[in-house]
Length: 193
Ligand code: GLN
Image 1 (cartoon, rainbow, N blue to C red):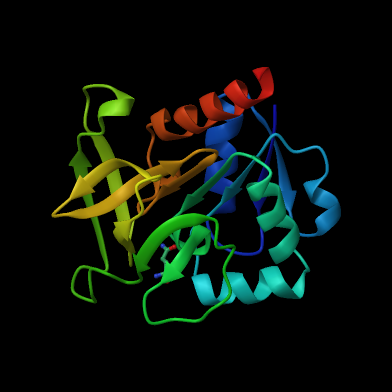
Image 2: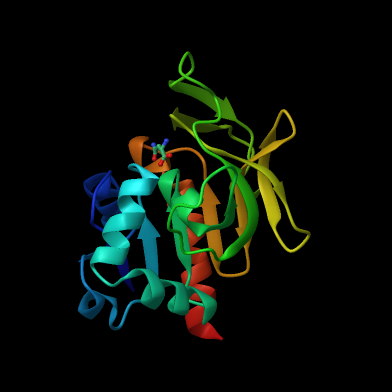
């Protein structure tokens, strides 16, 4: 299983460590040639306007969006969740625009720039997941084809839509591999079908 990690900025190494630990081969994605032969793609956290610009500069924006539309499993964390969204409230920044979600950036304000909370995520089992939020966005609302996997205070923090998975938090910064495992299961299911 060959998983690309968008390596333009952000927490690339932590995603790599987690995916390698789960037995996946990883490839840093910087250019379109890196997209060949991928079974899945991870979009790490960072800063979404910058990542959007770099995606465009490296001619990756449309090719990645096309792969997503054709069913490639893509998992976005934080900035990745923002880039996956069709709608970014109050912003016309570049995006992949694949998920039917409305995203609010930096949604928790400055005071709560960064925090950690154990949250129950039913698809991952009974044990709460240690969710790390860093200047986190949330999904304000979503169309019916989006499946919320974790909501808090009426906002969606983890969701999927077919081949796409998006988390407002950073599972790569924890020791808990369950979210990455969940993504790899999506990849395996697609390879089988
Ligand atoms: N606030 C950042 C943005 O708008 C996202 C933060 C993150 O990825 N940790 O892109």
